[in-house]
Length: 213
Image 1 (cartoon, rainbow, N blue to C red):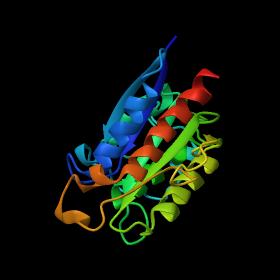
Image 2: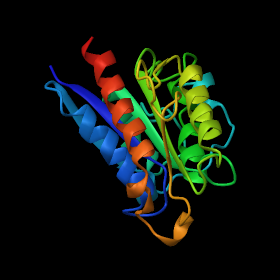
Image 3: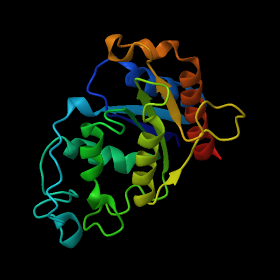
Image 4: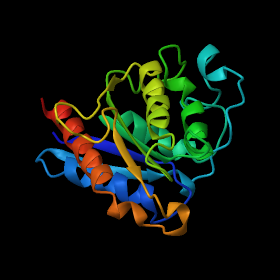
């Protein structure tokens, strides 16, 4: 049976640098037989902020088996999270961390935790997680953004992978790219970042290695 790696793209920009790096990682991952990939572009969904009501953890969600009382784009995303075997979350760096879209997505998965009250309880537990970040400078917050994504994985009881045994991965924590010196002025500037592209390819291979043993 094939293993599914799900990419979560937190960039609001279509066909930009984050898109390119995530596609690079997923293409590398799917080069192995037995791996299939899919991508969720958060910009295509309306995702409301978490209400902090804890209904997802304290009582069954009334009238449905969904892990949240809020009805929006997450209703489409939840089943894909349950189905996948691994996640690669990718975000551009905004003010030193992830985008609002990425954070809103994370906050709305409270019901997937160990104390969730629906069939989605532990939906991400023991699955593989990896991260990609791209910033306007070489040292522009990418590592912090990746660590924030890792923190999310740890809370979800997932298994986190970095760039593994490569001697010069570019970034030990995950896929780490930059579009410097062009920043946001050129949408595909990261394609000139050979080190960033290399780290994303390694991340794709590492997730596949973990899934296939």
